[in-house]
Image (cartoon, rainbow, N blue to C red; front, top):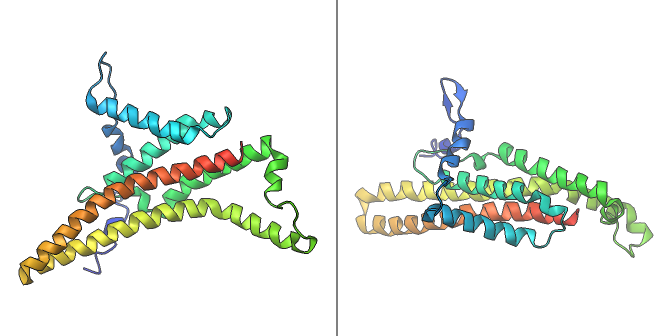
Length: 226
């Protein structure tokens, strides 16, 4: 059991070639498009949810920041769908890979920071040195603020990776314990199965919440620089 604990996080391959791209593209099948005059309930619910989420994130932005609306909406859909994909049996969760999450966080963070330095140079530099700082603390504060700035994309990626990985590991452990207890103590196995069911429901919520938190933090970084 311990040997297979992290087997679900290994990048799957087919004939020696990684098939991560195929897995990442699979959730697009769930995003239906309707050409009918009257949309079905699934498509209507998807459109309503996208509009609601986008409206909540973009109300604080200036017109320049709202140009990122399509990118942020695509980001939350992509992360949410890949998180939910990992909850299916015998599947792979791309968002458990720190390299992939860094690949999403660093370009978005860098784009927001570069946008801030391009259009709000004075305000962006002012973040490195708060007003009224004693002269003796100026070098230390500049170093601290610089480090905190560069830690932001790492914090984004690590937060998403840790939350998704921890949930999957916990489900794996409880599922294994339930299987073992089935033959030893059926009443105890029933209790652990109920716990596993509740945890699975919680993981569905965590998958969507983490997608929203990741996108919201990117939106806040964008707001600080526009």
